[in-house]
Image (cartoon, rainbow, N blue to C red):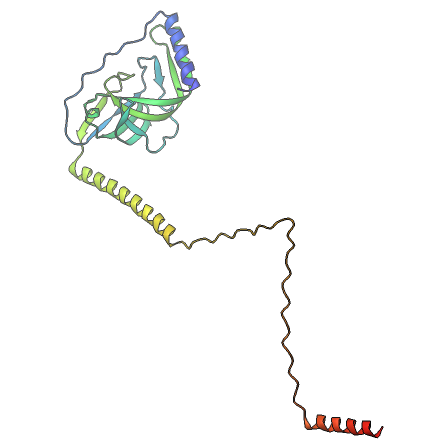
Length: 244
């Protein structure tokens, strides 16, 4: 619970003490008969009326709705999925697909929200005082038989048609298959990637003197064969030496 929500509850409790009123006790509604299959529930999850906790959500107080708002049974376990949620002048209207067997026996909706702003209204009126929530984020919607707002009744209940149920199963199968294909692609890419060679630095001692590369030995030169001109020059040189 956020600081704004705690502050709201404390101020409402102060007003109730001032007007000498006790908290309103609401008896849970009797569960409906069990039904088979998936069902569609429609109604106002947060009507624009004062609830049993002297709190009222303004019709258009909601921040942009995030995708994948959870649908729960009594704020605990998943009960299905939210198909549509929209703010209207009468309150927060929603449509949901309910799969949980106990949830399908519920009669009301309820919400959990993060409160960002509120105002105290009619503080001097013993019958009408309340806290008006002016800004909130919708965190979850629940189906229950003990709602905070008795006016949050499930207005329409009808079984999902066979064709819609088939396409819902097909859609869930496609989503599952897409996840498997993505996982296989990651595995294949990891297996086909070439192994990376890690070059480790060569450790050298501080006292070690780097060795110079040895100079390759020169191959012995072969004497060139004497030409006729060279032979003649050598003979002339030899004769001149004998004359001297």
